[in-house]
Image: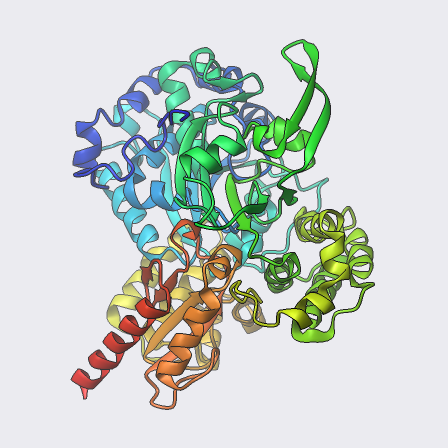
Length: 451
Length: 162
């Protein structure tokens, strides 16, 4: 079985490990920050660039590049927003960092703030984590009392405050410009880019960095071991470790941290997670949060891919695919937020899509017509199907709606809501065609009701 | 508006966290809703005045963000996650179990005023599906049997109060 490498989750679920400062200090906590504030901020940015760290929130954008894009000449303050909105279905890693190891996050935040000359950071945490927000507030107060944050960090002239800001149940707040609007006290309508790149015109029209919770924890370890050493973990262009959250139909769902690209989907599901439930077979998997395109067991993927400087042939079954950003993109899906949702042969794909479509219809912010209307229509069609009104042409109808959303909206929610429909219909066309008969033959499927 | 002194103190504490007062709108809505149970029209006016905004700037938040409500709910708030991972593990049956026990339907206040049951979207605990939040507490692996236990406990607590 492939070995986990727990960098970020080193202390998660460790007996006796508590979220207070004393415990964190006993484990050597804040030593990295202590060293970092003695270095030049540019050096720290350089370490992160060298590390190759890619954002763990969903897009996988290189963190060092994100920091480099920040407008440092405007004379305006630079803000950091910590994206703790964790709302991509299938994802539950940040929850554990926040609840069990908040000081690791705060240390990562402070190193990031120091490196980027940020004097004010906000942690935007989803409203459904009331205890998480309280734990963070307590941890920040402890850190401030010990001068790890506040007006004079560790006796230096550098000062930075962190405040916790609670969301209120809207998925779109996870989109970085939507999050900025929300933090400004508005509806979280994402902003159009250009001109509103957060690095230039972000919070209060000031340069702003938005980083995911897990990403910021990695920054701490990069500052500790150095960018080059970090880049040796994982695989080229997919460096470090990442936390994979597995849910759905496996024996042992949960969170597992691996070097990126060092575990295949098959190893993860069959060995680490113990395989399918008794008497069942795997049918489909969504590898990176519910927006990622679905993958079908039995599929093969062939082509050429870059390994280092060379192009090599690959011929993978689904279970051979390494769980890294580039490999998952290569086979037409994405690593996204690391949320792996597994469906076995008890699931009717139309039912599962109906569930996903209900989510996106509920969460579309309504700003762009194709997404607002399209997500509602996709929900209406799949709901009609599961309620007994399926028609053979519904698959084609769904596809035509989805095809008119992706690429026609201000933010990536358009793609996020279109991809499930496009991929489900493309990969399981027969199920959509025959759904009316399937339903008639077996109205009370042994599957759970999904929509 | 009759807010508790502790709520008022928190409100004064939180406003200066932001260089622009409007940013405090969501925190104030949370604090007022926790204090009052819901966001009444006069609460919207009050928050707007506090932040020097037109009331519509607050109302549009209340109507957009799912966690804010304009009407009182049952004494206990049962939120059942219905998103894919929870649904795959039986969340719909879990929800039905609560509905049956409290003789109510999702989105409504139970006849005895004790609970409001709601379907919510992903609560970010998919590995321990199905999950349910009762007020601020997360409950994991809530199959129908566990739902029944939790419901019985809520009913017992209600009976003790009377």
